[in-house]
Length: 168
Image (cartoon, rainbow, N blue to C red; front, side, top):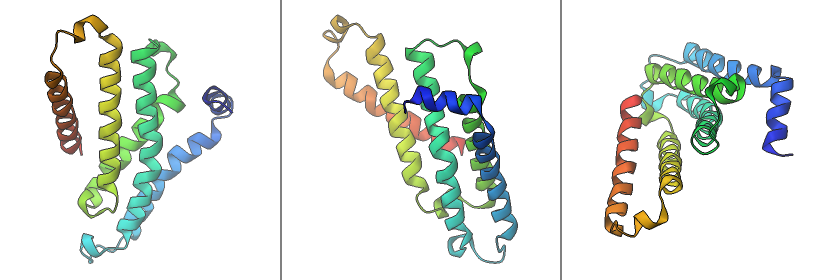
């Protein structure tokens, strides 16, 4: 099965994808209702449920975000051909769920959240570098010293990391 086959299957029968994209934020809401508000967040057992929810929502969201970057930057896909279920809803679900979790519990108390944000930073930086290299003509790089490219890469990583921390 290829990604094209998977996307076609989801497009033809979107019920399972929609069910998943609706049930994960609903599960987050239920965990926040059942959460014991008297226990400090660092000792709350609900932080492990939030960790599972973060991974359930971030993996499809990150994939959809990177798919959109690839399709719009490299394949030159038109915005009018955007598949809402595959390319937009996972990102929207991820953002809304993370914003809701942020109101319930600080991210530093959720196990593994730093790993997923670092993973997204790394993938975004790699996509940025690949796009830069794709647009760059090879003769132009011979005039730019390598240490400028390395410094630009480090600055790109820091900017992405800072933006991610400010976003949530």
